[in-house]
Image 1: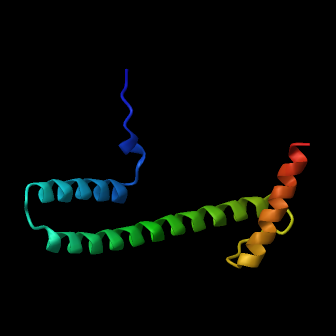
Image 2: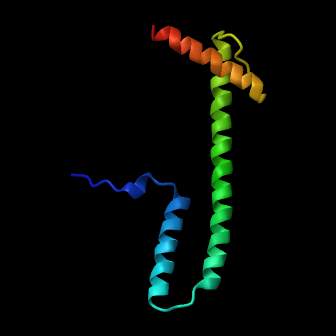
Image 3: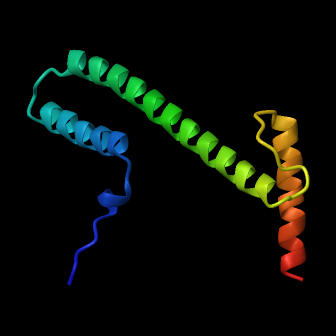
Length: 104
């Protein structure tokens, strides 16, 4: 039987954050002064999370563009490659309408 760990589903930056907090908590219990390391680590975590967020946004943007291209090729109304938030909102409305038609 294969064991499943909740940690396998977490992104690496969050795992590092959890392990770091465990380390600092243990160090404080043992009486070690870790203030300087905590400040440095918090700064590092902030930078890592920003990088992770940017990666997620870039990935989602690529997925949106891929979907726009595919839907445009098959002739779905209002579908074209765009970064305009207003146009994307219109595209989402069209997709929801089509989805509702499929389920009725």
